[in-house]
Each structure stands twice: as C-alpha cells, then as structure tokens.
Image (tube, rainbow, N blue to C red; front, side):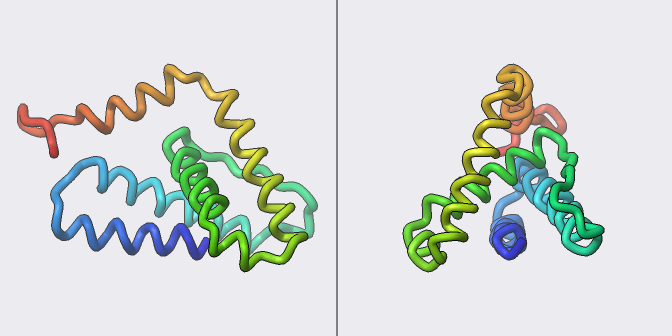
Length: 124
C-alpha cells in the first residue's frame, strides 16, 4: 500500500510537468488499485483468503509494484527471512497469474496507451 501511494505521488509530480495520457491512465489505475487494497485491509472479515478483483490494467500496476519491491536489494535485505519468503511466494503467485493472461489482451492495453490520440495527435 505504501509503495502504491509513493508511486501515485511520483506520477502526480511528473504529471504536472508532462502532459501525457499514459501517465494519467497509470495514475488512475494506481488510485483504483489503492481503493481496492484499502477495502481489502479494512474489511478482511477474519478470512485466511480473499479475492481481489482487478482489471488487467490494475493488475499490471500491481505486478509492477510487486516486481520492483521484490528486486530492490535494500528492501529485500531489510525484510526478515519469514517475510522475505512470504513475499517471494506472493511474487511467484503474481507472475503465475501474469503468465495465464491472454498476451493479446496485455498487448492491446499497452498498444492503447502508446497509441492514444487526442485531436489527431499522438500524446508524447
């Protein structure tokens, strides 16, 4: 959750300097993911397992956050061994879901971001 909030903050700072649809779209996806995570944290109803429904775009944001957190050396070193193992399992689970996604849908989403046009001009 903290990493999602930090990502939103960084993107918002970039948004002020660069008028780019991809940044707006990514911020929107981060914010929607954060809302879903807040709900998940606030109301788990003492369940051992919960279902988090996301769009493909929101899932890609979550995957980016998990990937970055897992591979940042200073974060991995700070984690206790049990938490590090749990996070590794979560990373593997996220990657497993990613591999199950239809690659055409993922490609279509990224193509949509890259090729979005406003008034006949491509945003850059």
